[in-house]
Image 1: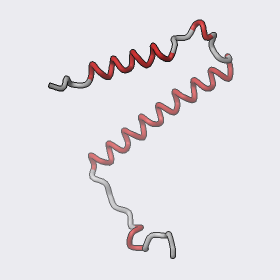
Image 2: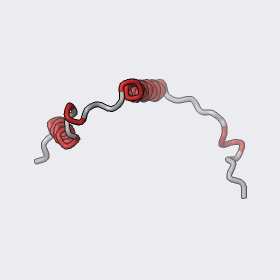
Image 3: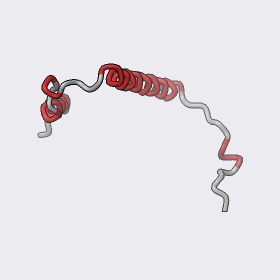
Image 4: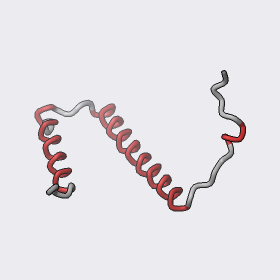
Amino acid sequence: MSEQPAPADTAARQLEPAVADAVRAYAAKTRADADRFAAVLEDIATNGLPDPEQCTPWEELREAHLARLARQRPAVA
């Protein structure tokens, strides 16, 4: 049995303008995130890893992020 779609299923369908804009915005955000990640990796390759004593422990970063999320979330009655 073939895994290929039937020829009728391969016809391109145009997206609604708002949906197309949302997809472009998501692509731009994903591209920006990848660029930031690549910059961090390049910095590590150039300068090595930072001194652990100069870094913020991941537990503190996690707690700060969870607190930000809790502030953004509406309170449940």
